[in-house]
Image (cartoon, rainbow, N blue to C red; front, top):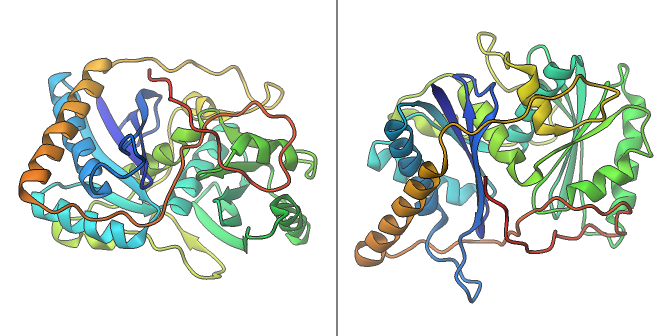
Length: 340
């Protein structure tokens, strides 16, 4: 079986999603979300070391299970740390790893969901702790129009989101749905607020903590392949206030199994057919290999290398059942994630 690995990193949390299919168009066959900080809250080692451990551990697990790891996508919050990771990957000879921005990963997932449900255009509301970006994703070619970006430093962040959504009324062709993806925020609360402001369905990932990892896998699987010497070209910088850009070239699309993407999003049954359930093929042995590789790499780093200090902070997002969003966006509570 061909599989694609998606990794989402913050300075404190790693989310991994192993997706079936050469184009990452199948179901998630392995998932995990875990903390990479010590008991006192400090980072155990540099974030790039954890990503490398994830890649190496997954490669070993795939080989042991008789699978082929096609590519790996990693979404990163800090651009400087992404550059450090890129250099480390090249030094170790690790190929087929695409570094993408969180917005790129979110847009890749929005396009895949839009294709699965049959929408021509999907509005993407990507919300971080300090910034919100509203974009429109064209399903056919993956082109993304960045409509508006706003800071969320105001005491009433929900009011800022409300004003942003209102700007969609100026679009000549309204999107057929709104897809909400978040990084270190309560996606469920944002969705609950936005669904009362728009006339189209508001969709959110069923597993918010894995959304960016899944999007990174999609971006990686559908991007042109690069040699390790040119891996830096694969790193996607968010454009400034641009009009549009295309996620992939004309030869790559997000074709695949619709049910797999419907499993990714929390969509009312009125809008989509019954979803298929994910199935586990790789099993817990993959996670065990991943953790073992992470521990071995950390020991080696302590002996030979001075860890790189992480910059910034991040908190893990969990699925909240809150029906009423707070006035200001709050990070989700810390909670031990459930593993598959």
